Amino acid sequence: MPAATPLAGRPAPALAAFLRGVERRGAVLAELQCGDAEGGDAALARAMRQFIAEAGRQPMGQWPLQFWTLLLADPGLRRRASVALELDATDGLARLGAGPRSALLLRLAAGLDEDAAAAVLGVAVPSYRLALQRALPHHPDGRADPGAWDRLREQVHRRIKTLPPPRLVRLAGAREAALTGVSEPRVTRGRHAGAPRTRPRWLLPLLWALLALCAFAFAATFWWRTAALLEGPGPGQAWERTLPEEPPATRYGVDAGLVAHRDFELLADPQGLAASEQLGFHSWLAARGVDAGPGQPSSEADDAPR
Figure 1 (cartoon, rainbow, N blue to C red):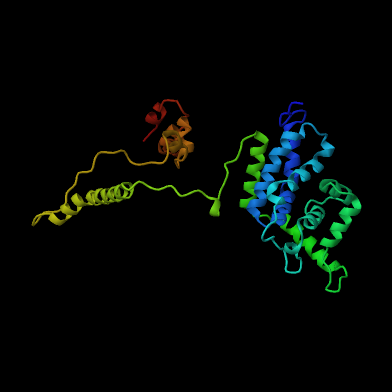
Figure 2: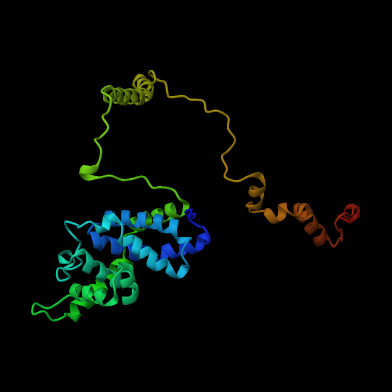
């Protein structure tokens, strides 16, 4: 049977929405299962890619079962971690085996009920209940500790809601890479990292030479100015410098300058401006009792008795 394409039979938004919904829970479950955030995120990214490759052959109702099964089956989570992360000194996650810890985290981090969690682990419901009972916090005398259980559940939920922003960005990048089919570059660290690349022997002397050349060029830009200042003007002379002809600086264009002019109303009304310029003359006519409207000749004023 040929393998289905990553988005065969399912719209991309549905897959993206599903992965976005389980992203935080999956990151916390993987981190607490293996005891390392980076290792858990890498396992989550691999599970996302494999889930998208197989989701087209499953109905949407089976997606949660398929996703959590793929995540817990990742080799990075199945290996026995030397140190498993603890949320609190009383939780004892590090002292649990991989099976009981998976049963506990499927309930607290993934939020699955008993039937779904048992199906993910591939065991019967009574077997899952037994594994969960072994993982529950207990008093020293063997009795169950409901208070420790409530604290553990609250701490897991708080961890899901308060993932640091850089980690959320990394998880979102892994999700988008899985949806688009782009493989992320493998990051190696610690003793698994490759040997560092050696620099050529001539590189360091060349860098120092370029640095010295830049410093010399920077100092030379001030040398001629300093020499001119040291020479100074002769006796009885003053510094003299002819400035180039430049128009006055302005922050406005011609139109904007007219709008900002304090006499904009007069400039916008040429007839009113012309009338205002003859205001003194018309006032004199009014005082003489002569009615000379705009545009009329002023002969009457000349004929008026003086």
